[in-house]
Image (cartoon, rainbow, N blue to C red; front, top):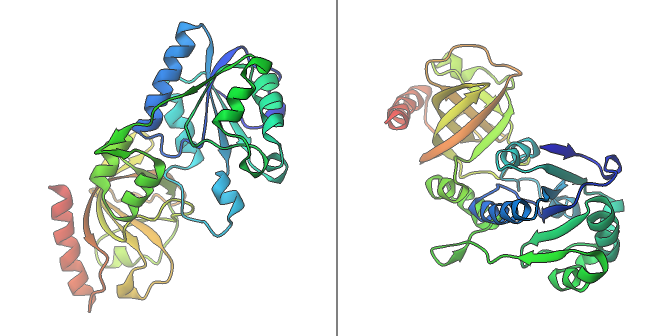
Length: 302
């Protein structure tokens, strides 16, 4: 998969089928759209591409929104590459780009740069300055710029339209098993291991500490997890929260990897969430905490 991280690096792509959107999480609904787009590209001997935005527009316009992402950009790129995409255009969403009118977006990007023949979008897709562009605007320009707009019906689960918003809500509620079904894989947080206060080591449970950054904050508490370290996968247990027993003030993901004693500082790891075990809790002393951690580990291993 070829990746274009700025529009200036694109001269002109060969005739293509594209899907446009944030694709945050690349859930089963996204995958349905991309399967249809793949068939369209294959049947018409065209390239298949994705147009997405970085940062996500909602986070650009509202700086107060911090914990919103289901996946980071690296995970998104990896997930799309696995779905047989020929190219990915990551548009830098900044003030200049946000001031493009919907007509300029269609002519300068869709037509002149990407050379799209079929455009796959969701029904509620908006684009251009002040969000003036929509499905009807795209269809109005089809003859002028030689493309066809494809709007697919959304995927429904239990009479609910599957969306990134539903997945974020489920993560916040700790409904990890449901979320993993909606994603078609295990939801994960990827990050670099940082130095902590080494309390876990003192009580016999070493942990790898990771900052949450822009990820959706899951329900605070303890989870059964799998940890990817390069090509190695280990089971473990994780706590996400503020560590009330130690009067912690910063949100942190702490992971105890079963059977691993190696120093992982500054290493990148991916933590796959399997199941919510219990809410975060304040303990009266370290002995109570140690007893509870042992119980949590037994549950996680089971």
